[in-house]
Structures are given as C-alpha cells and as structure tokens.
Length: 66
Image (cartoon, rainbow, N blue to C red; front, top):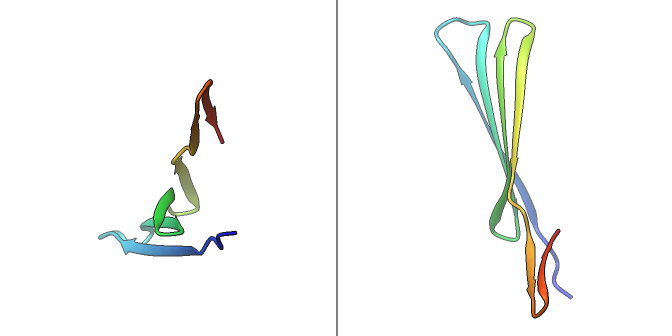
C-alpha cells in the first residue's frame, strides 16, 4: 500500500492597486500537481478558478476516469 503525500503551495501577489490581489495555489499529491487554484480579488469581489488533472486507468477493455 502506497502512502500519498499531499503538499499545498500558495503564492499571493499584490498588484499596484492595494485592493487588488492574485492568489495562486498548487496541490501536489505524491510528487504530481493535481490541482491548481487561481483567485482574483478586487475590493470585496473575487473570482475563483480550479483546474484539476483527471486520473485515468487504462484497462484492457477501456478507460476509466477517476
């Protein structure tokens, strides 16, 4: 049985205007980036974007997405 190690790394970027920020987060599981999160903030408004890497198993009869 393999133990999965998870590491989350975040960066916060302050733009010229002090009420505008970018937050970028990557989630690494067992050495592979599986999720990237992007958050754009302006005052109290924000937009969240998440990008996931799909895992798949290639079997003899087909493909299974996890």
